[in-house]
Structure formats: structure tokens, C-alpha cells
Image (tube, rainbow over all chains, first blue to last red; front, side):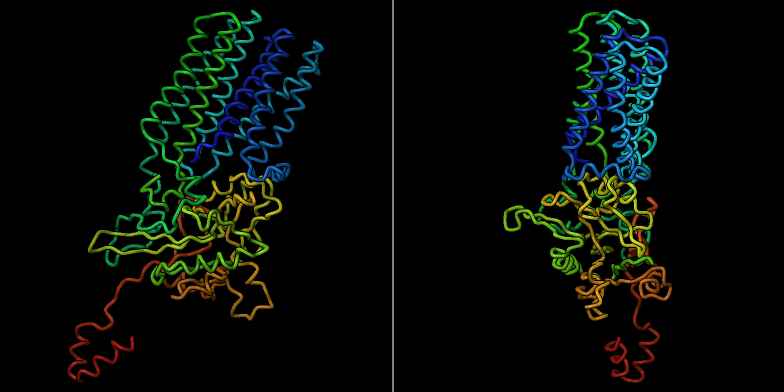
Length: 317
Length: 231
């Protein structure tokens, strides 16, 4: 798949913002509330990340004037669900921030925190299911995609949460453990997903199956046969080759994987373990984490192989 | 109703007449068109097509065969392109035809990702998704003579390799051909239940066997030539 920068930025930025918001609310509900100034900063950061992501997602649309129609098919489309949940989440997060501003405690604040948490999960899960429900893309279809999206979003959010906690010198220890554990879990999920893709390779669709060699599309008298593309039929690229024809060079893949692992996991984990206080290092860890996850998400797209590639001559997906 | 096409891979010669006839009819269609072209006279001509013909070689020489493979929307029974559409622009009609409402589409590409056959192409000029309409503005047009109420690709095919009809009617030509010739839908593994069916190449059969040749020769050369010429 073509790695579309607007979607890559959207999923990573929103993912971090939603993870941060869910964790802030979770901490609030489980008696680890940040002081009101820190909570306000956290909600503001989460909202900026989510809104920047949503703005970026609109850039992906070829006809943004019709974007408002995306609320129409909540009952069938995960993209529509994502849009509806996001539209509910933003005013709710603003209300949650307003309550933090006024230092309001009590049932209203608890309800706001609970709603913010559940809606953050709903948006993150809907985003993931957009990709996980696409049967023509073997690398995305299935449960590994939502597991990864949820864990990676919470991991990057946890790094930011810990940054806030360290700057404001509160709950550093418990949030340190939380962030560290989420980082390990996210990395395990990432490795698990990669291994599942490799393990599923024998079942990958082939050009022969795509054009029906098993159904009798073969020379007379032969029961099995290999197929290859003879002529693609168009003189220059098409929408299909632009969108699905992307091929990732192996050495680029390795370099990106190392960058994603180092910036996305090793650097923030080292910062967590070091226990370093101070805003500059917290910013550095947060930015490194998001940068690493951008590389990871770029690979998520670049390594996905749509079945249309078979009809353009790819031997298998 | 379950309207769709049968494509005979045995007789298709890969001439692209179906694809160009499709482009010609639909470019000015108020339902499916326009089909924008980008740099049509430049060094890198490209554009939107509903129907594309690709060519494959199956097997190894000398036991090989060229397969000409036209592909357009399969008008799937379980069309994921419709399920994933957030705006409701993509819809499936009661007669089985899958269409895109050009006024509602926001060009998010998700339906193209959900289609395993590459049947949907984004039109960069209009910002909306384009796809085969099964010439819905021909097949229902009562101003056309009945024999012309068929998709443009079917009418254009010079080898009569394309057939249009209702697969829910077991007596229709498309149902009969599919049953008789072992027609199949593409990528059954993905369970989209594509309506369009492809007929595999026929097994080559001797027109007359060696015993018959001997018998005919005994009756003279003319009796042998006759069945060969008339086959």
C-alpha cells in the first residue's frame, strides 16, 4: 500500500492523544489523579494531538467538502464509527478539561473521566478496525491490528503521562511502572504481529489462485500450472498501481525498522528506567517515541500487500 | 435479481474493445461519468477506466497458454465496498448493481482498499470514486431498442465473449453458460460472492477420432473434408 503521510500522521498523533487521555482519566478514576494544573496540561496536549490528527485525516480526502457525510453509516462502517466517536470525544474532553480547570471533584468529574476514557478507547478501536476489517490485505486483517493500535497508542500516551508526572513531581513511580510495562507489551504485540504475518505466508494468495488456475484456467491437459503477467494492458500507471503498487526496498525496511525500534521503544524506555526528571528530557522521550511510531506506521502501510497486486503480476501477497 | 456478466476466457482475444466501448459510453454518462483522463496526449497518459484487460501466460512452453483477462466490478453479493463506505455514497440496488452516488462520495479511498478486484478507481479530477455501473443507463433505457439494452462492453465484444443477464433466473443465458461450462467467480477464498462469472478455456477435443477418419476415407475424400469444413 502507498504510505499516505496524512493517514500515518493521523493514526500516530491521534493514537498518542487518545492513549494519553484514556490514561489521564484512568489515573483520575483510580485515585492517582494529577494535580489540576498537570491534568489540564495533559488534557490540552491530548486534545492538540487528537485535533492535529483529525485535521491531517481530512487532508487524505479527495473531496473534503463531503467529509460531514462520514457520520451517515455508523451501523456498518468503522470509518463512520470513528468519525462519530471522535465528534463526541472532542467536546467531552473539553468539558473534562473545564472541570479540571475549576478543580471540580465529585460525581460530575467522575462521569466526565469515565466518558473520556471509554470514548478514547472507542475511537482508537474504530481506527484500528478500519484496517483490521479489510480482507484483501492479509497483513492487516485480523486481531493483531487492533491489539497493536491500542497498545501503541497507550504506550506513547503513557510516555507523555510520565513526562507530566515527572515535571510535576507526582506519582512518578507508579506511572513509571505503567509506562515501562506498556512499552514492553506494545513491543511484544509488534513482534507478535510481524511473526503472524510471516507464519501466514504459506496461505497467502497467489497469482494462480487469483486468475482461477484451479478452476481450469490453464493449458489443456494440465492439472496445475504456473502463471505470470504477460502484459498489464495499460501504457502508464493507473490509480491501482499508484495506490497498491508500492514496493518497499529491503534495505530501507531494515533501516526504518531499526529507527522505529530505537526511537520508538529503546530511547523512551531508557528515559523511564533512568528516572531522569526535568521537562527537556521528558519532551525528548515523548518526541522520540512519536517519531519512532511514525516510522512503524509507515512500515505498516508500506509492507501491506493488497490482492490487486496479484492481477498486476505479483506472484503472491 | 442478481445482474452480472459472464466472461468467456476461451474466446476472449484480448482486443480491449470492451474496455474502450465502456470508456466511450460512460465518459459522458450522468450516472458513472465523467471518466477523467490525465495527460491523455502527454508522455504518461493515464486515467479512469471501469474495465481493464490484462494478459497472462499460464504454464511453460510448449504447454502454455495466453489468457486474456478482462476485469470490472463483480457486483458482489457481499460487497465490502458498500459496508465500509462511511458516507452512504456506495450502495447496492435491488437488482444487484453496486453504484457510487457521486454527490455523496468524499474520496476517502476506503472502498477501493476493501475491493480485492481493483474494480474501483478514484477520479482525481472530481475527487470521487468511479466504478462500473453495468451500464445501468443502457439496460433500463426503454428508448433503446430491446437488443441494445445491454452493457456497452457486451455489445462491443467482437468474439461474443461477454454475456449479460440475471443469475437469479436459472433459465437465463448467463446461468446456463455458467452451469454448462464450469463458470467460476474470482477469489472465492475472500467470500465476497462475486456475481460475475468466468468461463475457463475449453479442453481441446478432436473433431473426429482416428477410427472415424478411416471410415470416412473409405467413403472417399469428400466425405472426410465435409465434417472438417462444417465444424
